[in-house]
Length: 348
Ligand code: NAD
Image 1 (tube, rainbow, N blue to C red):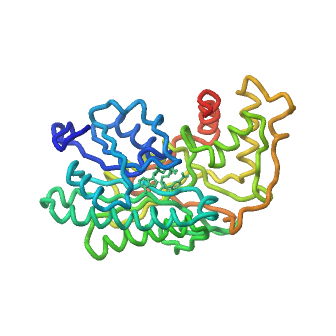
Image 2 (tube, rainbow, N blue to C red):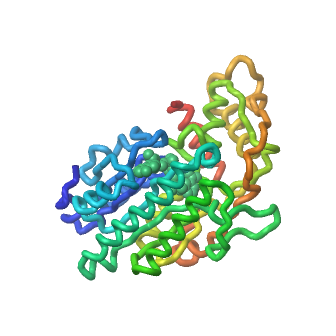
Image 3 (tube, protein in one colour):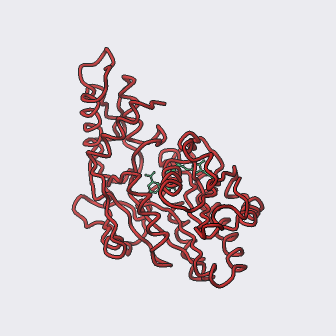
């Protein structure tokens, strides 16, 4: 376990406290930071059903990586983590993240996403007050949020910018919107140096099987039906997770304090298009097709729509492009091909 005098001190690199680092995006972020930088990472995660420690196998023995199983709502435990590791910056990803689960049971979303974020902000603020001037001005509380806080768009409306009003639809997006407001308030009221990023739908390796893309890939591989909500015409903007984590690190290190940055894939697709593309990729890449079907598309089934289902998300990412020079590197075709291949090789 990384002590308070770990490699981070020796190389004068950042000591990054990451919450939710055992989840889909958090684990990709940790692999990126450990493999591409000299920074140290302390991952705190409660290890809910959504966590997947195998996504961290390649970094778990690295001396720049430490893990603590902690609930972000546990104030005392979070205080001891700050005391023990003395982080330079915080990247906050821990959340309940699945819209369908928030509809059938919102309590955990209110607890983790709102109370948990409040708890972290309080501890971070009190810790930040104790830092010397240099560390104080370099400190960041980077809150990772979603484009779903803006609500949805009709098919013809322009994309959301960082100035679009918040208008969340689901218990999930409402809890994330609430947490974004808390983060801004801790900046405005106490001066805590915060940054918020709002990203579109991510996809890639190690995503939990409940989410659209991995669900469709694993059901198709197993010959199960591919349930598509309503008419499948809902539009999402898809972002490859490795593009996202690169943007997160850039914003953390170069972004302006107090600002929001949209991070999108510049890639709007209907759910139906996504499922059809997965089926086409499987026709090409899968070696064994289930016996009872001729084509993977035969498995597609239209099911009753999700209540309050958002029609379309679209993000204007000109700010991060103009200020930090970021844009996604991986096309949807490349990213989805890589993802389908990964699930074929690592089906879980
Ligand atoms: P995920 O559900 O895969 O992972 C969440 C992680 O948080 C899990 O490891 C879980 O164990 C941990 N966690 C949950 N409650 C906790 C608690 N109380 N204390 C400590 N740890 C806890 O989520 P993800 O898809 O990796 O998303 C990460 C963040 O990015 C979330 O804040 C989410 O709102 C945001 N986001 C996700 C997407 C997406 O497409 N996946 C898009 C935009 C924003």
